[in-house]
Structure formats: C-alpha cells, structure tokens
Image (cartoon, rainbow, N blue to C red; front, side, top):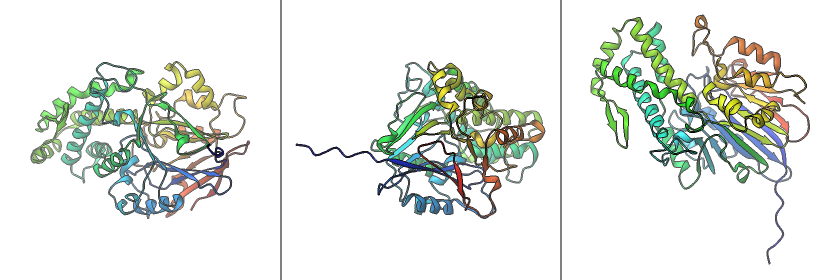
Length: 433
C-alpha cells in the first residue's frame, strides 16, 4: 500500500536579479516557497560583448553561485551570440561555472545536434532546417575571417564591420559546456508551441514557448539563407577557400594561413565594398537574433516575458500568424515583467506587442521592464540605429518603470526586483547592489 501523496510546494515569492554585464544579458529568476522548501533558480543567458567598468564575468559567476547556493536548477540560452553565452565557458568563470549541475538546459531548436538533416525543424518534414543551420555556421566562419582580417586599431566603417563580426563569434568553451550539460536527456531544444514541463524542476511554474518558430511554421525566420552564395563569393574575393566541414556540405572552413592576405585586401577595400561586408554581417546578426527563445513564464499570478534578442521575423509569428495568436495576445496583455528585447534596439519590441500594454482597460496592475545594455557599443545615432533606441526608451518610461543596468552606480553588480506570487502587488526594487 502506497503512502499519502506529498503536497506540492506552495509558491510564495518571485525574485528577479539583472546582473551588470555591460552590453549583454544575464538574468536570474528565483522562485521561493512557503515553509522549508528550497528555492529553485532559472538562469537566462550569461554573457557580455563589452563589460561595464570595474566588473568582470568571474565576479558575476561568484554572485550567481552565492544567490543560487551552488548553481541554477535551469539554464536557458536564448541564442548563440557572445553577449548571451560567453560567461558559460572561458573568461575566468570556469572554476565556478564548471561546478554547476543544472537539471534542465533550454536552447532554440536550431542548436539541436540530433535534428534530422532533411527537416524544417520540429514540426514539418522537407528541406530547410539543415540549410538554415549550415547557413548560420557558414556565416559565423565568415564573421571569424573578417574579425581577423581587419586590424583591431581600425576606425570608421572598418571598425563597425569588425565589431559586428566579433559579435557573431561564439565561445567554443561555452558551447562545449552547454553541450555537456545537455547530455543525458537534460537538454531541450524548443520551438513555438512546444510543451515544456518546467514545473517538473520548478514546482508551480509553467512556461509557454512563443518563439522561435520553425521553418515549417514561419518561413521568414530563415531569410538569412539567401545570403549563403554571397558569403561564398566574398570568401573567394578575400582569398579564403570554402571547404565543406564534416557533416555539413554547405558549411565553410577557413585556412588560417590565408588570413594575412585577406587582411591586406580588406584594409584596401573602399566604402562600397565595406558596406557590402557590413550588410552581410548585419544579416547574420539578424538571423542569429531570430533564433532567440521567447518564454512567457507563469508563476502564480505573475507573468514574466523573456525574449532574448528576438526581432520581428520571430515575433510576428506569435503575434499575427500562429493559429493561436489571439490567445497569445491575451496572455501577453497581462505581463507583469518584461525583459526588453535586444538591449533596447528599435526592432525587438514590436509596436503590436507594445500596444497590447497601452490599450485602455486591459491592465489590472502596472508592469515593470528590465533592460541590460550599454551605450555606444552598437548602432549609429545618425542612422537611427543606436542601441538602446531613445524613442523606445521614452515610450517604455511613459508606460512603466524601466530599470536599466545603465543606471547602476559604478561597481554595483546587479539590480533585484521581487513580487509575491499571488495577489495584485507589482514588482518592487529591493536591491541594487
């Protein structure tokens, strides 16, 4: 005869810490329970493209370790950009991060090494998924060649090309660690609408995956593939041979012996050619961003929206084209906490989404927004592409409290907000260091 079934833990508090990683993302969601039940912790991204003064990733790793009591229960990597993943391997974090043992690792479907070669990602047969992954791999190889071919002291347009190329490079040590964590059934590669039993690890918390879509769900998410031939042509122009990588017919390998001649050529390219290079690495940047995982997390009465760097081709499926998009919009109307997409860029908080939060009589309580970013790292104010985009900041400030890492005092490692899991209370700032 079996004994009585244990009662599930009672969720009491939702706590979110935004760490100061400069231009990057690192968020720790802590779900606390009544009684003696230990808290559960979900870490969403850990990386930086340019650190804030006086802080480093090893110090942030120590903070996370302290706040979680030895490491997060769940790790989410929204997408494979260095400013979201570099802290998971290398950069002085190994001594701490190497001791973590997450029970669940969530990544986008494009990262799944076991995905069939002839699929469009989960949800539909036919060619496409492998081509998108190969195109992304090819683009990263191209970005690596560019970053090495343009001298670090470059200025102007060359510097812009080099910086954006560098942003596409993933840390192999971080990838290896994530892959190791994902082994033995702990890794989940998600797509729009996929069921995700987060409450098996974090009791009382449900999650709805609303991005990224697969190619069979929404073809525009793969627009980057159209530039594959252009990558090939410019490789030839740079004197860098295209060599198929094992298991990926369209992927590109780079002969390091030819980086010297490539550097000579790139340094002599004129404005039109450099702008072509910038368009290519910009297309790759957009394609990588559109693989971002978007999670709508329900914890008691609180709804939290985390969207990585998802841009319009990713968002538009959930907002306008998915069969259940009306239901998704209704859920999004009552978001309590919004992680501002893509560090405040102009194309990662769609007006359709923002307008859900400005419609009269649709809100029962005020929202809170968190934005991890750093000025003068990406974009150009003269071209209205600066990150963060001032017009977006103004709109967010008018609609809700906006907490940004830009506003933290030098050396302050995080800002923390907390709310009861149930009731009408809003998130409140309890700590900024």
